[in-house]
Image (cartoon, rainbow over all chains, first blue to last red; front, top):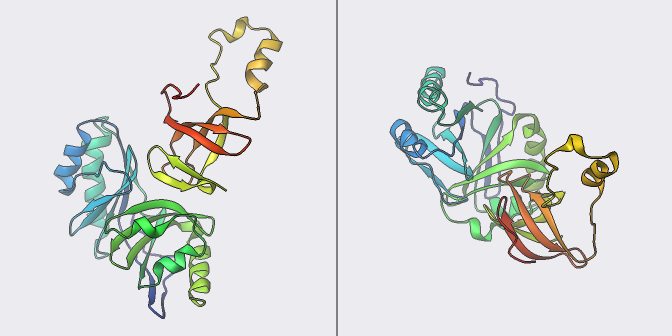
Length: 186
Length: 91
């Protein structure tokens, strides 16, 4: 079910930097290497899963992130979605994909916590403790899975100076504290 | 520290990867027919050479896919990176 007890519930503002946890967000993990998978996803979500590495696709309601050659993450773009929306989407995907042995559908809404970072200094902040080279990442829609301060994250470049960062729930508080601590020294 | 070119994600820092040891070690087809020495040879004995070594690597903090790498252990120079199941591009 959708988690209505978010772990952070804070919003912080610094110079040229705004950090906020965005919940509740529907997040569903998709895995498949079957040929019909793309068309089925296209039918349900009206988005085709990206085949190119480190990219994403999306429409007004959902974003679809490339995670590996046979794995994608879909998440809702607005946090107004209700529990019923999630159940409906999950059931739709499950009936069309998992039940017909076309792949795997896993609800990871409670697994990942989404933190939104906005501002011109977001890349300076992440570069403080991330081995990834963000020079090639400025393109809109880019996706990367890497580590920030030794914590596994998925980063989605939503717009110019607007990132969505996914972190595992149990690590979210630790990363949140680190982000806030580092943001003070930017 | 060195940069590894993941065959799926592109160039990433070595800290995102974990090494899975020597590559291309074939599991014996009939393990029950092997002597203890032969089984131990398969299970534990690795070349561990100074020079060109064939290794398995996992992009643990990225796409979580396994791949093979040809690496010079004396200077960490990566000669080639190729996907699982493919033949090594260098000898």
